Image 1 (tube, rainbow, N blue to C red):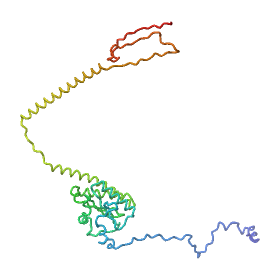
Image 2 (image 1 turned 120 degrees about the vertical axis):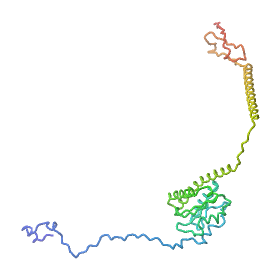
Image 3 (image 1 turned 30 degrees about the horizontal axis):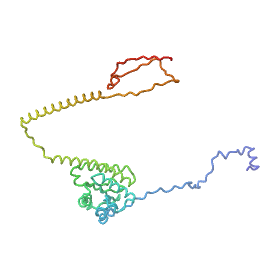
Image 4 (image 1 turned 90 degrees about the vertical axis):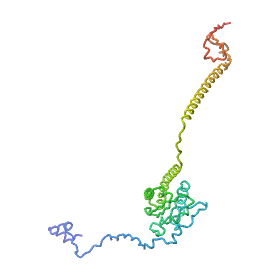
Length: 325
């Protein structure tokens, strides 16, 4: 607010109006400004829990649960899925067991699946080679078997072992290719259960072609087991007699055929001669109660009732005039 003294100063030129707006503001050098936004501390990712490697190794008691007698479902069918730790939910377990059962019915090579957690380790005495030798008899009545160790969440840790009858025919590199293809297919999914489904689906497809190779190999073995027929010499006289008999038989067949053809032609012509054609009698129509036409007509007669009209072309026209009476 302006005072009278300020007004007088403006008139004398001692005060310039608005001068303070363009001057530099006076700042207290000791003044401090609090920050308007307080920086929040950065989120620190929790470090993964470090477990003792010995704690990840399954105990003998836990492994024993995988190798009881072959379990059966309520319908009496063998269950090829081993999950004593209940890593799958009930629905996931039923779906997986149903797929393995379906594969067993459609294929001669069964899949026995052992499920483990992602980070679990298998004891050395239970590696898949030893297990296949010691416990392969659990499914001996089911035919050739492929044992699979699968770690949920880590398909790349999967292991596969085929029974001896398969390994005798299928080379090791082809077995490894089947396993790698199933692992690659599993990594197309992110969910653990879906990874398992994709793994089994691809493995089942690969085993189908392996089964075809086993069938081919078995057929070749059967063929190789047949003794070849030894060559034997035929006397020349016997060959000449056979040739004469063959020529005579061919001539007889030709004569019989010609005779049958001639008889058939005569029978056909006789049937034509015996055929009769009956023409219906049609009354003439009248228009307005009177006969109509051009005043003349023609009568066609057929001499032979046994011949068709198309073969009786000689016609005689008979004119008939109508009288007005």
